[in-house]
Image (cartoon, one colour):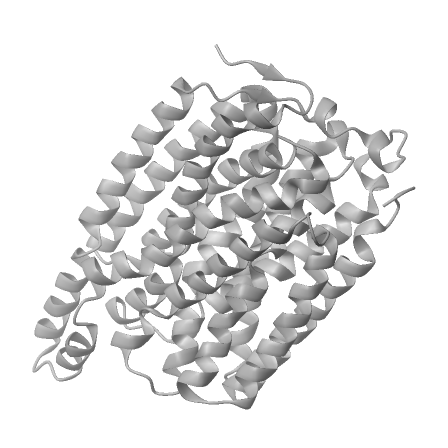
Length: 427
């Protein structure tokens, strides 16, 4: 039987739960950051244009928008611990569906599989993010989430290399063989064989997710009651509906824009590099470089927050870096421009760890619902890249990148400086 923590636990009692949640962050980091190389994979396997290939992040992130609020209802019935395990089971079902549909080359079926994986992640994230935020003092939550981010982005950096080795090896040569295939049947045979490479990796992933779900259920992970650990009086609030917290609603928009720019820097970097004519064997690894940038950013954040700088001030600094690196990408070309996009990983790293606790601060009994609203904001990862791929059909792709990214970072700057205090009696 798990224990229940109604208030903030001691630092020593945080260690075990943090390690368990860290494993979960590693898992959904690995799964999430497969989307970059998956976009490259489906583009060749199904002979798609950029807009159609980018339905991969659309299907994945759209599930967050559709299922985050239902997830909060589920969590009220199951508790956070069982909810996390249920999320892992749902992800396993999605992995099986994705592998099966890819194996028979039914693209829309594969997108359904990604949607189901996203549904499981929605439940997992709706539970794990507020859990780690209120496991200790809310003002130092960014530090704890930074540790989770390290677990997440180590997995994110590994994912493209693992996927590349198992699935994308020799992709340039294969693309040339497909183009020069003597008959339509020969071309389809090549693509069938290429698509089948994904099947067993996703079956193994499904089995591991089931084992992890069983482990979480049987673990000593305690329950945390948000009403006790994240009291409304901390921000001078005296009750009322969730609509009485403007810093939450501004935070939902901030998270929406942040996930959009994160996906642009992580998942879209391969397509961005291809626009310069860079080879597929190089672009398939670009997501890993962004992840390494994020990993460096998390380490810096872990060291300086809150000891030397507050989480809200660091968010503002990160937004300024985002603008600077975006302009750098626009002003350069080729591998140098791609390097600036990868550097956005460093700028983006501490944004989620800062935005999430700032947005749920003092939400008390509304914490689960607030978390669900923020998780819904992850749909920005579906919509903002779509804005980019449609815009670049009409203007130069570097102009499109600049036009999409800069306003997002400027709003994040506003939230870090002013927006996070809206409606609060004291910051």
